[in-house]
Length: 93
View 1 (spheres, rainbow, N blue to C red):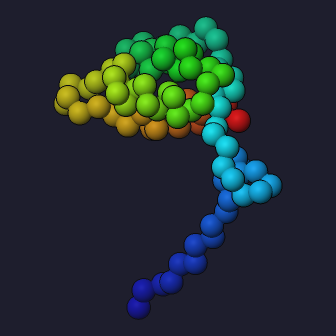
View 2 (view 1 turned 135 degrees about the vertical axis):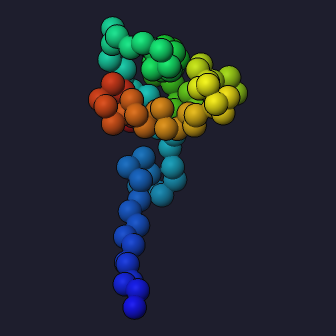
């Protein structure tokens, strides 16, 4: 017998009082962080998008990824943004 899992849905943090969504902004990016390879390439693009909507970063890096692995399949831009936020390098507002 399979267990039933109850999902809890919460409103994202960027929803206004009227219920409309406002775009998330890349508020801050730590300066002078030393990376090598792919991380350095993605970090460089992130720094250029500081103060701009996160959607701009995602659109720019999806259209032209700063680094492509040997497999030739570009990694998702959202994953890189999530990596930088989770590691404390960038904050979204």
